[in-house]
View 1 (tube, rainbow, N blue to C red):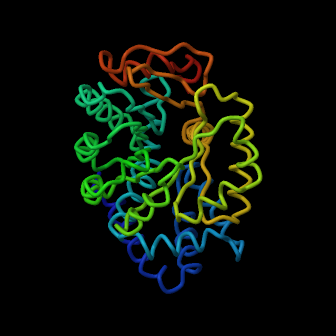
View 2: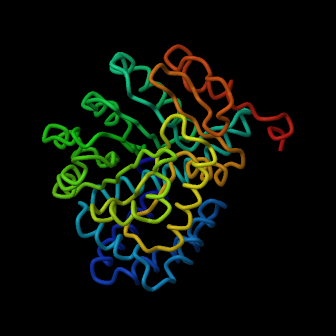
Length: 343
């Protein structure tokens, strides 16, 4: 995939646009979106770039400032590699592959998978995670979300073995140490996502000084609703210059609260008043999956390797990733109906 002609042509255009962004950000972004819309073939690409063009008609959009800041402070190779892995490998080429494999294999396939790296035992299962990512890439999955509540140092070799994928590493502020930075810098296909907590500002400053792309995430429950709904959260997070502000529901957070937060994220994105892009982790991930391949499919693996269908929270967990593998568990959890498979 790395050397496919389509990818080479698109990457060349992206590099040229990045140069122009430093001189005239608004014009360069609009030209890039117009060109992408013209050549978009799939429904996801067309819908995404049509939305982007509509949003960028807003002359005072804070997203122009966000883009200009990103181009000025993030090393070019990180922007190009991560952007191509996410935008082309995952959401374009990978999305086409997912749709074909769903039809051929008869089960739904998510566009991204969330792994909780939370237990002291996760390092013992790195070979199984490696195999799961290999299986996922065969299906067309090229985006991975790693949720780390402990030292993530052992994850970097795993990430390095999959240079065609885009990885989001959710981590703690105290994890952003000089040793961790030394591991992150060579991984152009990785974006750290730092928990909003004491020390987040210092962690983000370290990442910014290292010219790395990064985001922040805010774990929320019902009591956090006013802070999110009135926009105070985004006013505060934008001061740290994150590309995304992810909103992650805490365990036990009611579904109706998650839907309220999701609607707020949508409204804030449309309003374009903050220099950061809100993303409700579960709902927005599920919505994107529905655009890519009709049926919702939002997959989360806990630290024991059990599959939880976030789009069906009432379901019991499925199987054991470490024993059965990714493809076998997706086949169990997300079989397509006979009618859907024949279409």
